Length: 245
Length: 222
Image (tube, rainbow over all chains, first blue to last red; front, side, top):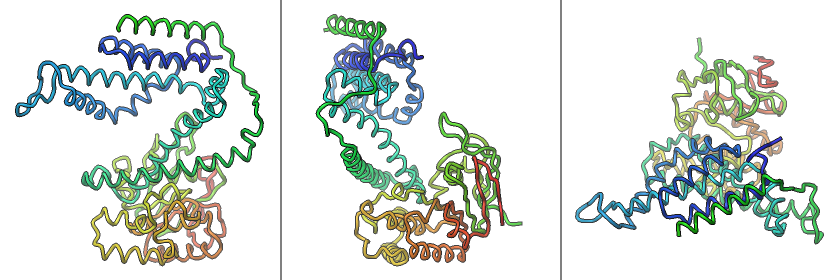
């Protein structure tokens, strides 16, 4: 039996994730953002997510984070100039501050989202349905969750297929590499369209929406832990937002 | 003594958080042989093919390709030597037209327009895809996708081919054509390993048959 955060109802996890990402979006102070990120990491690890696998995977796109921080810094200059290039303020203290804040925000959203990944898509749909979200919309959410790893697999397959044609991606010129990457889009998009058409047909053959009311074999029940997590998350988030704004 | 083209030395592989699919497997594949790899579903044939091609990296043991440890080789480098046909050919098709699918690698490798055009024409003819040359590859039938994937793989002129269930989706006539093409390639000295359930197909081509069960080789017959 799952205990603590691992055993939470998906609705409680959803509230927790919404609170963390809302704080991430609205808070401006780097210190508080760092604290929210630390809390997200601790909560994600406690919920049994595969956070460290994700961090390992994201190591490869670390440069993207650095690039975002620098671009943000360049296009939103303020305060003391840290790097000057021909009289143009390239990196400023204020710009860098905003850039770091942006990276922290993105990290909070991504890390907190891993908490949701600890519930399966069926549980999430059921949670939404019990919250009176129309089944069709809840089902769309679950399909989106289910399709994401498939899209990732599709991209991996194309990259593998390209390399198996004897192309070493890191050795070809940047212009050609860009062309190769443009090839990734089509199989992924057409694959998604084909899969969604097949899914629609399959759903119709199983009489999806044939009857106005649906019953569920799975029924979720919230316990004291769930109510405690929901209340604490909401209270802390509202208080933090109230104090910081 | 002939050197093996692909050598697996005590190789084990398991998918993440799963039981091992291949266990302590050692195997030598020669360019001069047409090897058939057979076995029931789940016996590890496809995984073995992917490990041999470097798509999957073994957790234990070494895969040596042409005398070089595949751990030190990039997939692109392996791809220059070995052609791999996926069980589902749709997974290795990505260009917007059949013609571009075939010319993709040649363009990146700097072939001239004349060379590319001649190679495309030959491939389209050999694989009976002339009438589909400007078609969107995703709209091809399963058999056509299979032929296109093989054609795109062969323009790369690999030394060794690993084909995973190449006869799936092919009718009797197409199987005969594929069989003729593979025999032609064999005569040209291209090594081959065919993973297949189709005993009749491999029986008339294979010099060596390996049967797998539970991730292990249970029979190796020449």
